[in-house]
Amino acid sequence: MEMTMRWFGSNADKVELSEIAQVPGVKGVVGMIMDIPAGEVWPKERIKALKEEIEAAGLSLKVIESVNIHDDIKIGLPTRDKYIENYKETIRNLAEFGIEVICYNFMPVFDWLKSDLDYRLADNSQTMAFVAEDIPENPQEIIDRVQAADGGFSLPGWEPERLSEVKDLFEAYKNVDEHKLRENFAYFLKAIIPTCEEVGIKMAVHPDDPPYPMFGLPRVVKNREDLDWICNVVDSPSNAITLCTGSIAEDPANNVYEIMAEFVKRDRIPFAHVRNIKFLPSGEKDFYEAPHMSEYGSLDMYKILKAMYDNGFDGYIRPDHGRMIWGETGRPGYGLYDRALGASYLNGLWEALEKNKQ
Image (cartoon, rainbow, N blue to C red):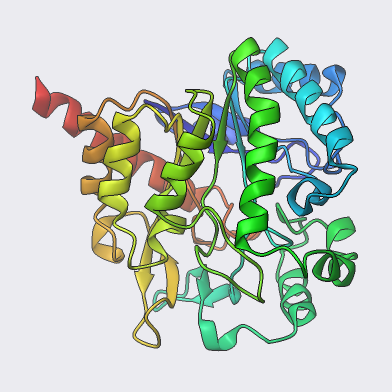
């Protein structure tokens, strides 16, 4: 297991690489290039510069999150083949610089959804929350709310250039149901996985967040059955999963421990996001993002990591979203302090699992 932390780049992240390098046990960075629009090729020189900057700080770059998928691919438009070819070229370029895993999602319009990016806990720390009754019927209202609370930073999956087209996107997706989205996903995977096999990269899909339909948009990465379908539609180790414990567990019907154990054992989880959530009494699926420690949330983090360890997990892991604590400000979910605490906690659990096995 290699512990990492997400970093958005020197021009897009308040957290410095030198600070990440000081977090005990963190060996690498999960990187991205935020200003390249979906569908465009990632130039080699940009990838090279990112890698060199990260390695100069004493960290590794083995995972990219995310190379966003153009909506024409998800919708199934005739133009999708052009964007798929661009995606394949990006895969080759990333592999040339030692990238092993690409985390991505296949969600229409919104890459993730929360009702509140500034949810206050009893200790006055700030976190993100999802309360169903607080989700407005008009998608534009949630966009305005997110942009007002983004801390001055572009949020992944909520880039301004993408959100400016949201009305057109909803119109474009109006005839895309779950069956059609699944067909388009299969088309994409069948096109790119041979390239991944050729260059040694694993495409690792992130579960839908939340893992159920919103605003009438379909979801196809929402439960164990969907993950099994994905693995089988192109049966290859290069066709993999980023298991996000918080996202998959947002639906209480999903048994995150069994799902983690099964797909680690099947060698389909090269990358994991590990976070805790706390369900609220206001609704069955209402929750806030809790501190990583088990006692603060609804998930047993020891049980999650044990499922990973016992089934041979040897991939990359990162603490997922953290609270804003100790007066820190910045991109919601991605401050330094609480994620550093989470990384240390997860590393401690892993060390205990290793030593208990000896």
